[in-house]
Length: 296
Image (cartoon, rainbow, N blue to C red; front, top):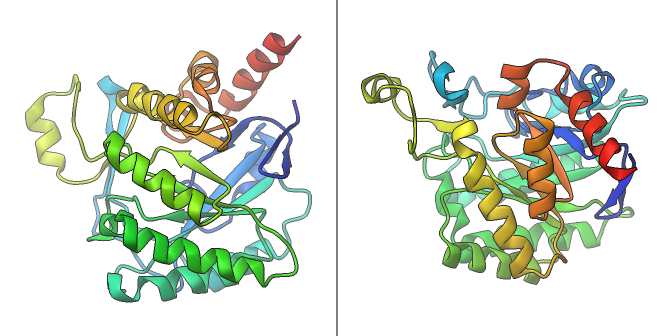
């Protein structure tokens, strides 16, 4: 089941997406459930409570979630404390972002702080500029802003004694032209891979009545309604890069067949979140068994 991606050997192809283990508290437990990697965070330099509650909602008929958590976490120093004694844990990624009160003009400082702080304690780092639940964060996806952040982190990495892969998590709401621009920046800044995709601000193809969806309000939609868009983005990036850029596929994975669809579209690894919430703790092993059977 082992697979080598961006220089790391993963026990298997199935991981937990960022947002579940926000404070690096559950990665060993999740590893025992069969997940080969766990992405902690999103971690910000300072602790913050996140957006007002209620901020997480289920659309049961759609097998979907809407959340506007707002990077609620205990802050960088608390995450480091948890990671210092990680032991025989799965591969751990650190998803980093900026504090809500940090303006975009100073966002780089927050990313640098988290990057330097987590660098020695995680196996790879993910730059999150695509979460829809932080005011104006999406503006950092613009080519110039993105290049400024990623190039700085790449330069910082070059001065480190060890090498950690840097990944970029991208939005499903980008059009092909915007994806092309993002891929240009990724290549220019020596970024090791992408995570496709984050949650979406769209509310397309939902079964839940429109009035209920509207009453919930803003937030990122995840789960089955985003499955096809996620696969479409993965397939597009794979073809655009000739399969040379590693992709972690996320979005609407509720079964082994969903995971295999992402892998066949070009993903090297997959992550689950909403599927884990709906399907329960056996999901990773279910997916791994099916993958192993296909490999025989």
